[in-house]
Image (cartoon, rainbow, N blue to C red; front, side, top):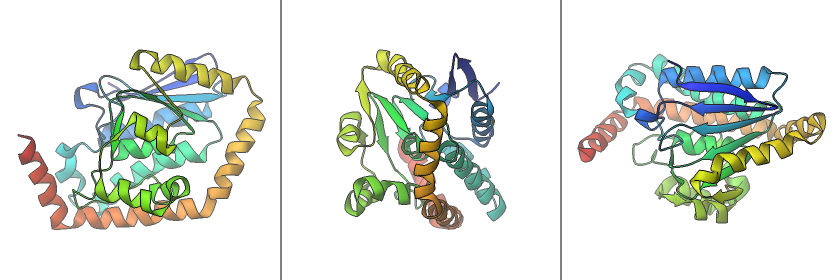
Length: 253
């Protein structure tokens, strides 16, 4: 079974996170499948635009905490896990094909980071996004320490990351972090409408624009990704992180 699916509909590639029974929580296997699906979409010459979505009741509920012990077994396992997460960001932002998010339900932690890695976002009215990392003695990834201040400024960035409060689709629209908010039943249709409109433009011009914009982000963004990776590795290895994750599990029971 593949935990991330890829199919092409005309000139639009559809990438679907496919662990609905776990609300598309991030596991090692899912990351590997996500990377393969994105690479297939990026390398497919017939694909002009990528639509990213999630199967089931949520886009992505963040790290699968059932794998925390396995992921944090050693510095090597932590580093491999975080590097895999950051490779997704590099694929999304570092390729020249626009990525349109069609996102609903929960977008938590890494899932929220992937929202911010999209070039365009169609949000369902029921989208709820937040960063739980500070509660878990962990750290954000996905280049958000660079991307968020560019959009929100310093204080709003601190608010979203440190307080970790749940953000509704309406608030995300107000903050400029999503482009459209629609009823869930219209979400995928709207995302394809946007994707097909993008695909009707000059592919080379759109590709050049995304490349130039990301070059402008360039060194600072990729440096932020490296620094986030080191901060997250060190956070995973602290005993405090393991205890907070275990406490969260106890609180949920």
